[in-house]
Length: 158
Image 1 (tube, rainbow, N blue to C red):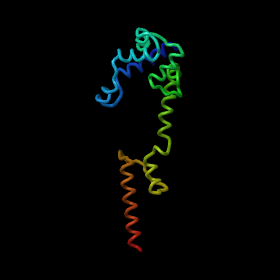
Image 2: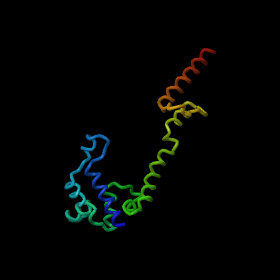
Image 3: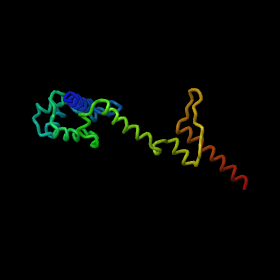
Image 4: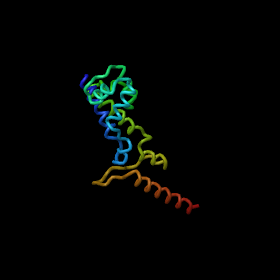
């Protein structure tokens, strides 16, 4: 377990040194030097800089109290707490993937379902034929066109 804790702390440290973001510009704004990170870590944990450097490099194992502080320092999901550092790989991966998948399961996050509800459509066949697939934008344009034509025809019949 000590190796697991050290490896995950090192991975978080390396990620902060590399910076976050999709573009080089975004990464440049969030990137920290290793020395800056070690200084912040030493100050936050109340430990010496040499010891903080060894922890950040995955060479020392912090105690449980310091793991609590590392959770906050690295902005680890508080609901997982120290188990982020200590859980076995399959359990940690399952926990992370489950939280991501849950976001995509909710009806509110399905743009096609939202469009169907917006236009009051009860059912629609969105099977893919060949390589063609319908995007939420395409479905929105189709539904808007259909309902606009229905409203126009309804107005003409009055």
